[in-house]
Length: 118
Image (cartoon, rainbow, N blue to C red):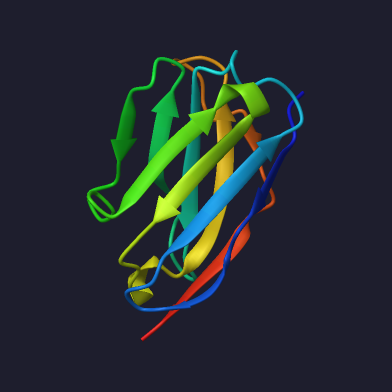
């Protein structure tokens, strides 16, 4: 069992930056992928960015070029650097871990609120 705890959310003006962190209670090196999802009010949860154990990354089209995901297996932490934020990025951001490529996301954090003001 892995517990995930997000931090770094908050209120920021449009055009600003935030860095989210996700600290895992156990090793993430065994996880196939780590990811960040978000859910805005009235919308479905969506995958924002993911990074595999091999370092492959993928991003939602809406954040490409602005967000960067990274993982530090040595300290069991995943980051999401968010630049050029806009009000459409306002959502609760969730960290998740996926054990295998063919499974669903197995572990979730409690979420951290990101609010971007115009």
